[in-house]
Each structure stands twice: as structure tokens, then as C-alpha cells.
Image 1 (spheres, rainbow, N blue to C red):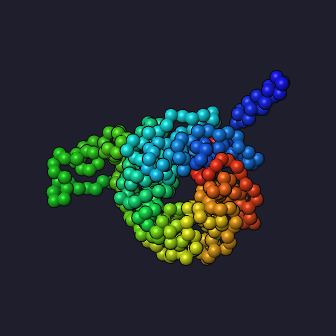
Image 2: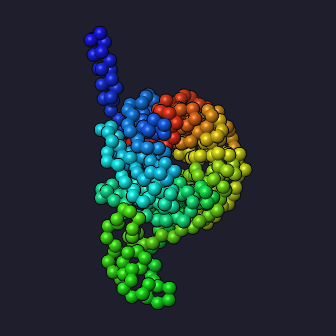
Length: 365
């Protein structure tokens, strides 16, 4: 009996000691409140770590060593859970203060970009300083998902209940508004936390106070799309944006240079949750929380080419970086479906926890 207990303990220790591979698949479980670290080759769960309450989205840092998780709660929560992927342990939680309902996440320019749905804003968190260094209001209802361009000069959000997309562009220089009609009185702050000609603002307070955008302001363009616009993606060439409209069952295609909708597809994607381009930009996948299929569209012809049976419904979509597979989180079925991108067939399922949703890649550098 003692030998059996010893062997069981040894097996548990070996499982716990499995290291995170250089490339790892990250899977959130909304019901288990865990983050699973998965070996993308063997498809085995190597570790399960606390994700904080109601985890919805996850992103990895550029060096692949840290994961950030949004604790959503439909506006009830205001934290990002942080996980050390190498040591496989939790790190201090990020308190977003008044910025409640964090959801969409992107890691770009060394910072964590997030939406705060209940506050109707997007923001960025700077890990080295431990501070929120930028907050931009959208004025739209349920600002949910976010995309940040690599040059950090353009940000896009989907605003579910307003049925809009917001394009936020960084402008060169300041507003140039001095004293006079429509401008601030002499000595008064100019709306960016400083007086005319004064020094740049100091560090932000992280609680929605004056937030500067060093080196320029931001212009916002609000573009009406379909009802329930939530999941969206930008084409790999950066020219188009496709947004899935859950209530209308349509897909809005935007020309990003012209900042306007050029086509609305009658796509039959009611209850759409996420939309993703393949890495080569040739195909577009749409998951639907209330449907059994993943819909696949040709990005050039804009025609549906297949419906792939995956379960009772799906949320998160993640493309394998090498373009061979796509992972789809089938939330009602408690598994992640694995689809071969050559055959467009389901080749397996991954059990990484109940109600899987957010997915991400961590590539250690």
C-alpha cells in the first residue's frame, strides 16, 4: 500500500513538473476558472493555473513568458490576472480601478492593450512601470474586442450594443489650440493635463484621471455595421476588416483606408462570436455560440465554401502560426475542436477544461 501511494505521489509530481514548451497553446476555462498550458504537438495539458473570476480572453507577452487574462463579469470585475508561464505560477493581479468589464486583449509595443466594456474605453497597461499609461474613451456601448496595429498608430474596437466599429488613429503633434474662441483660457489645462506650452503630463494615476498620449492626439471614426458586431479581424495585408454581426447574421466588410463599409454579406452567421482570417489571408472562419458549425468563407470571392460540424456552439478561434491547423473553443461541449486547414475537417478534440473560450499562443524568445 505504501509503495502504491509513493508511486501515485511520484506520478503527480512528474505531471506537475512538466515544463512549458517554447511554443504553447493557452486555453481558458470559464467554468473551472483555469488557464491550461497545452503542448501543441502532443496536445496534452501540461499545467492548469488559476485564471481569476470569469476569464474570457487571454494573451501572451511578446517573449512568451507571461500571460494576461481578462476577468470580465459583464462589468462586475476590474482585474487582469497575470501568470508566469515558465515558472507556472500566478503573479500579482492588475487592478484596473474604475475601468470595469475588461475583455478584449492585445499585447503590442511591450504593453497590454485592453477594452473596459462597462467604462466604454480602451486602455494600455505598461508592465515595467506597473501603471495604466493610456485611456481612450469610445462613447460606444459594449466596447468588446480590440485590434492594435503593429506600428501602434491605429486601434480598432467592436462595440456590440452600438452596432459599430471604432477606428482610433494617432495623429501627429497636438491640437494646436491656443487661447481664443473655442480654446482654453490662458494658464488652463488644454485637456491633456498641461497648460499651453507646458511640460508633458506626469505619470497617469491608473484610475481614469488625466491620461496623456505623448507625441500626439487620437482621432476616432465610428462606423455603423450590423447589430451585435463582436468578433472581427483584420486581413493580413491590413487592407480590410471583416466583422461578424451576431444579431443580423451578416458580415460587414470595411475598407480600412476609406474607413467605410464596402459590402455586407448575407452570411447566415446568427449568434456569431468570433471571426478570424487564416495566416495566409485566404480563408475566414466564423464561430457561432448558438450553432453546430464553423462557417468558412473565401476571402477573395467572399463566398461561403464550407460548414464544418464542430459541436453545439463555439467561441474562441486561434490559428496555428504555421498555418496548418485552427483551434476552435466549443464552449457548450467542453472541448476545443482541432481543424486541419488543408482538408477543412475536424481531426481531434482537446479537453482543457469546462466551457473553453479564450485561446492564445505563447512563443518563448
